[in-house]
Image 1: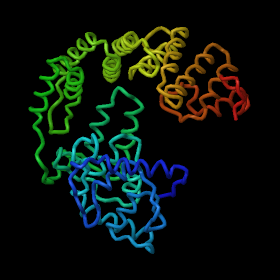
Image 2: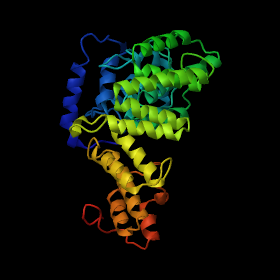
Image 3: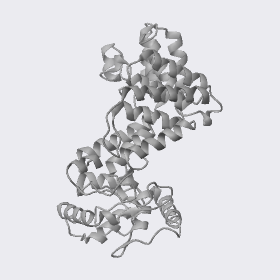
Image 4: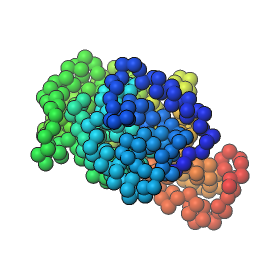
Length: 409
């Protein structure tokens, strides 16, 4: 638990005040001793800096609040802190419920609140790495565990690859720490609050899909493909999966929605039906020809990126480097912001196209431009060992000119 720089102090305090007042007077006043849970939730949300820490390891206000509530003393070592915090969470997790803002479920536990946006939160670092309480709290508000909650988020953001991966990383962290699903707790005989029946959930999804809701149709196809639904057991049903997949395809064709089309491409990819996968990515590109940059529909760059990779490698289509370049340039141009993952991953594939054309100097320029971004499983095959090993294997210097014409490193 490291200290934060003071450069963001004023902004953090301002955010804290705004967040606390934004709790709304309607939030229930839930107390654990002198700890007001709604204030704790706000502090977890904005990660407010603590100015009067009760322990040298405290950086954030939420840590200070929890340490006070758990009886942590200034002289306690990390082992003592962990023991006290574990006991506090295990004793009070059913009371550590957040009803702040637009969080769903209202009165879901604080771990769900901390993980709701994906990508980590310092509370999770403390809980998973140090305090290690029981992670199997089942909220009365929804009947599910935090692991169930993260899986639902992964499903919701399925068409948004990089947002989804943030939740996948959170899921892996919780799983490694011993978190379980509701159905695993049920199998172990743990008494659980009731949830809506599988039949009721499927019936509601079918009704919504019948009124033209794409998400409900693709969700039904997903459920029948896997036989997996958090509310209870059910067998896979390939025939019903195809029925709802066809319904989803009809809705996507009618709506010309970019995200729906990209989602279908992903679904067919999971089925290993490459022709249909690429056809739907192409539809997403067709449906998403860009308006002004700030309004580019989610999923448009990813469809272009997938098609660019396919044409670059001749994977499911004849190799066509010109088409590959067109799609990769569109993917790079439609990034949401300068730090968007679309930029470096597309730049690496632009380098790969130059490499395929035999222009090693141009490839090196593109690779150097993208060298500081994290490697991903979407990188071109020639970069399996990384950019610097590639440069060394080609006899090129580690530092040189990048695609912007600037000296790199």
